[in-house]
Image 1 (cartoon, rainbow, N blue to C red):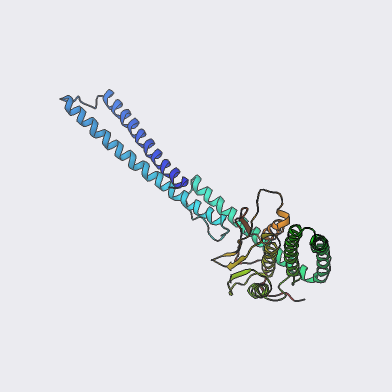
Image 2: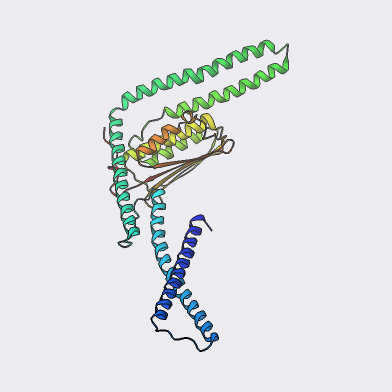
Amino acid sequence: MSGYNRRLTNMMWRSMGESILLGFVLFGAAVYFLSTGGYLTPFSTWQEGVSFTLTMIVIVAVIGGAYGYWTSSKTTRRLEQIREVMLSLEKGNLSRTVPFLGEDEIGRLGEQLNQMTKKWEEQVTSLQRLSTNNAQLAQKAKYSAIVEERQRLARELHDAVSQQLFAISMTATAALRTLDKDFDKAQRQIYLIEEMASVAQSEMRALLLHLRPVHLEGKHLHEGLVELLQELTAKVPMDIHWEVAEDIRLPKGIEDHLFRIVQEAMSNALRHSKATRLEIKLAQPGDIIRLTIRDNGVGFNLDEKRQASYGILTMRERVNEIGGSLSIITAPEKGTRLEIRVPVLSEGGGETDGIDD
């Protein structure tokens, strides 16, 4: 039994106990006033008095318990309806509302929750509309972004790959010098060269991934993702599996952000995770877009303040811009699982068609 159900059961028992106790108090008060007013006659025998008293106690207990159960079950049913709506809100489903629950405090609580849901929906709509507007601005500023991206890649090539190649060159020179003198040491240096070359290769693949178009270039999300994944499957020594729903049509801003999140996650997997298997799933169960990315790599510690190097902060910012939520499940040597949920509202965050230049 879950903690919530246990609390509801305790509340029902407490309500029944209080009703039974109140029934005994009222019964005692009634007996007292009737006795003092002369309306009750003494029993002929004490056995008759005991039998009458026990009978009345049972009747009062049954009536009080039944009344307490009825009132508490009525309250718990209404609280359960509020809880179900709150769980739906937690999962990003904004379409579910609390039905009318009466004019008391619980009913007013349900009305306030509906008002909060409506405001939340308006905010998500505004965020998604803003993301589409940002996509339009990004399309207009595409050429300046390309220049900036080239500069960033040039810096990363110098800082990462260039340094790796320099280290490989220096280690190779040292291995040649020690090959005749100390074969074991030269062998260890050659193993180090192999490891550094593998790291440099992973860095290059990740950088080449970023050289792809920043946006979907007029394609829908399904088309862009499948094209990206097919290309990487042919070039990267990693077992890549995907399930991408074909019938998903989203506002342009949301599609661009999800596409970039997948790019960032795959770049992290190539550069940091040392994974051999990667899974990507994109589905739309109801009014929710669910994107799941999982690898079997080395994982990392979420408590450490190194999330920026794994692109987590960038992905969180993108998810927040489209009104979604990001969950990360990872641990050292346990792989990484990213789950993004984005609500899709009927009004949408803008048009789902492509944007003209």
